[in-house]
Structure formats: structure tokens, C-alpha cells
Image (tube, rainbow, N blue to C red):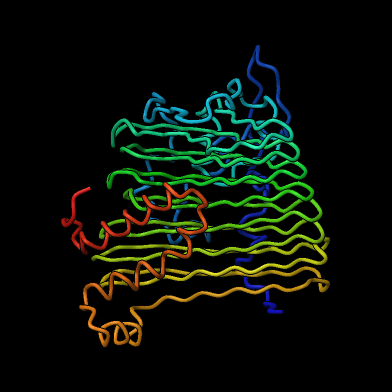
Length: 411
């Protein structure tokens, strides 16, 4: 078992759902003719103004290029930046959910300013609902297409798997937009749910997303984040293993090119007893100013006895000028666990692997290609959808063929 000392920016400090206005003075005055709200009622509205604009000194913003994501700090004047289409599994789409209409908000709490903006701006949430005890054979696919790099959108999606159901939901992002997004995921008792979010934006897109998941008793969730395109893409998944015997897997794959910033702040909360979790994110970077950020937090709560948990991040830097920041954190609040640990590694090509391949007559360029494919294939193979796995392998091939300047192979 690996334990850790408590750092100033622990998982609980950075991700716990604390009212952001707790230290804001209550200076509002009654308005004639308008019912007076209590302070708690105003806080539950998640007004963006309560969160304040990040300065860059906050622990969860200090690695993000604020100047580039600033458009997401204001609500969309006209919420037309993306178009949604359910291209497979339309029968599982329910009526749109307004704010406060169950199950919207049953678990989700805005965690930062873009999430609060999206909460307010998305007047209706797309609701995907898998009926009790139903096994959905084919993936449910939601296509989210940006309508232009200068167009804003706020979105909220609710994915709900009822008791003992089984399904896979794929969110596919493409085009260009300035898009703030919330994704609320609930796996009820005994459900088995996979959610895959693919960011294949154009290079001028800006995307900030908060994914929050609750896993109930004996349920299982596999959550996968795949980021290839976009100028700035920040997808922060939060998974709570609340029910006894629940299981969570969080996987990520990214390939950052010159000028791209791809970020994930991953939080796994073991709350119930006998829970198990596995976190593995892998990324490759090439090109001047290619950037990736991964911050992983695992919190094993005081009631999470019998927990088994591990998190890891591994990055492969292919060229000079690329930078990968990787920060794993682990906090354990009970001594009665099966095991827990974390790891992080960032480096260049393994010279021994290259030498081994070249010694067998494989050219250096081909050897490098094989090493990268082998490195990232571990995540690709966890997707569980053969057609998507093949597509992602092709995307990796094209990224490598394009080279650091991104001008190589055609799509």
C-alpha cells in the first residue's frame, strides 16, 4: 500500500463541493415587488458572479491559459454555438430537463466559473435515460458540432442508467466553437455504464467541460476522455463511488500538437465501502508549445473501508518545445483499505526500444511510429468499440505523419 502526506492542495481542498460564496458578503438589498431570497436560496442558484473570475493564482486554474479560455467566463449572448444530434440510440433520449427538474442537479454541482455559466446558460439539458434492466447492444452516440470559432454555446447533458441496466454513450465533439459544458452521469444500483467523450475539434475551438459522475451500490462506470483537436480543451471528470461495492474506471488519451493546450483534472472519490477504482491517462506531445496538463486526485474517505485504488499518468514527449505537467495526489482518511497508490512519468523515447527495433532492420521513423502506437494503444484498447478503436488508431497515425508542424498527412 502506498500512502501520502497531506499537501496544501489535496483532492478535498481542490474538488470538494463547497459553496463558493461562503466568504462573500451578503450586501444585496430588497427590490420592490420581487420576493426576497434567503442567502441559501441564492447560493443554490449557482450564479456565475458568486464564483468570481479566476486570476490564475487559484490551484485549479494556475496551469490553464486564462487569456484563451476567457470567452467561457461570460454567458453566451445567443446560445447557438453548437448543434446536437443523436445519431444512434434516439429512443433513449427523454424530454429536455429544465434547471431543477429531476434528475438534473440530483448530483451535479458547478465546480468553477465555466460550469456555473453553463448551468445558467443551458436552459434545457439533453437527457439520455437507459431503462431499468435493459442492455443496450449498440452505443448511444451524441454528435456535438461547433458552428464557428467565434460562436458561444453553453450545454448541460444528463446521462442516467437505471437499476441493473447496461449501456455505452459516446459524446463526439467536432467543428469550432467556444463551448462551456456540464455532463451529469448517474449509474443507479447494479448499472453498468460506459461514457466516452471524444474531443476532435478544429484547432481554433475552446472547450471547458465538467463531468460529474455518481456510482451507486454495486454499479460500475467506465469513463474515457479522448482529446485530439481544439486550441484549448479542458475536460475535468469527477467520479464518486458512493455505493457499497461500486467500481470506477477513468481513462484518458491525448495527443497535443503545436499551440494546443489539452488538460484534464481528474478526481476519484471513494465514498462507500468495498469500492475499487483505476485511473490511467496517457498522452503524447509534439511541436513547439504543445502542452498537456494532468492533475489526478484520489480521495479515500473515512467510510471507504476495503477500498482498492490506483491512479497513473504517463506522457511521451516527441519533440523539443513540448511540455507535459503531471501532478498526482492521493489522500487516505481510513487505515482499513486493500491498497492504494499513484504514479506519474513523463519522458522521451526509450532508446533501448528504438535500438531493438532498428537492430531488426526497421527504419528509425518506422520504429518511432511503432513505439508511439504501442504506448497509446493501451488506452485505445479500453474503448470497447472496435470501429472507434480503429478510428482512433488512424488518428494517431495521422498525427505522427503530420509531424510537429501539423502540415503532413491529409485527413
